[in-house]
Amino acid sequence: MVVVIATLIAPPQAAASDDATTPISTDRPAVTDSSIVVPAGSLQVENGFAQTVSQGQSTFDGPETLLRFGVASSTELRLTVPDYFGHVEMSSGFGDLTVGMKQQLGPTPGGFDVSVVVSLSLPTGAHSISSHGYDPSVQLPWSRALSSNWTAAGMLSVYAPTQQAHRNVTGETTFLVDRQLTKTWDAFVEYVGDFPEQGEPRHLVHFGTTYKPTLHQQIDLHVGWGLSSAAVDHFIGVGYSFRLQVARH
Image (cartoon, rainbow, N blue to C red):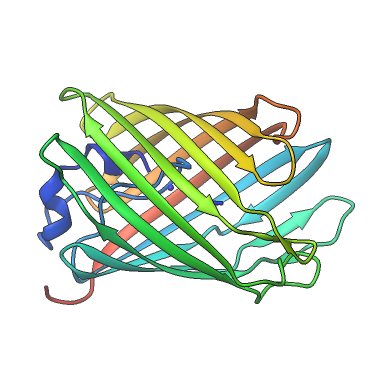
């Protein structure tokens, strides 16, 4: 499951602009997706690596590549490249491919930016990693600037992963607060709650920071801890993202 906080402090008009001065705004490293789309004609490449420890088992994964292409002022197409999962003392391999799109619905009169993301995971991964099913998901990310330096955001999601040949419909809610520390550096704290149809709820707290060395590049660092017995023990990750203008609006 699969984002950025820097996106949340970008101005609403960024979704409708292919101006080279528009700063990069990504879906990572937060669980909460950006509430805006990439500029029309832009190709954005978001990447990362992470280590996760769950029930004493350590997993490494990467490159966590998400490709986002703006096809219109409020619409983007998305491709999540299969991620490689390396397990210590367990089988390893590539995960499934995911295709999707994001449609920006805001900003609303109340100052909220809102989008809807629809995705479908395809069973292309290794036998021990793939869900072996066609798994849909719907996400509704939102954000609102509280001041020039503070932003609140969140996301409501429904996933339908295939687990042991059966659907396990899972609802997810997130809430995030972001602080702009400097013009190019920000930090966030985030709550994530998963509520599966089968199994116990999973709660975790997530901290992260992003830095933009240039207008169209971003480096991120994030860590998180599980707050319930069913959640992961902890995880840590880093990432690098960039954006290219490949077509005219």
